[in-house]
Image (cartoon, rainbow, N blue to C red; front, side, top):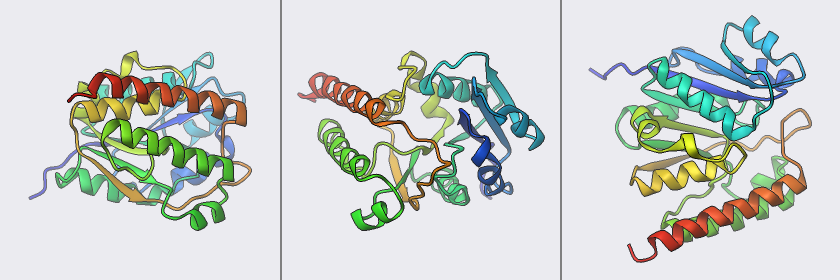
Length: 239
């Protein structure tokens, strides 16, 4: 008989009121035990809506940043006894119905970390609405990160991920950046600890209501990502 594992979905939210209800409605509740939303100082109705949907809600009084939001998410999930933690952006860019497959691959012992990859083909990704500059930046940064880490992932920049409890307890995510490069730092920590990473293709859904960082923030994120990759490379070049 398959061991029963507690699954918690965490939603790092900021001004997500327009897409939150759709996102939550598609989360498969038959395999998810709890949904925790961490609100990072939203100026809309995110908190009120999350509470009305029966979610566990944690609030930051001030906006601390995307990485700081995830730190709170993971601390809370671990404190609530999660065996598997699924991180999902509540902007409805990612299909929550696929969560059951993320859980299955981890529960059955194939992988320790699962990523939802939006990059199956250039045509499909651009047809899904991803801006061309983001697509090409994603491909370039992923190439740099794969070369530095020795991995062959199709995407390092997804907002849909799942981790075992062991992973989150044994990587030092608490000292990572409070900004967007947090995700990159986590994956390099996962690689450094030699955890197994799997991927599932997810449909690309860009639309006006979905959150997205602007061009200047994207540039800063890209430079920070290259910096993380280079530091990893120089540290492990002779491994």
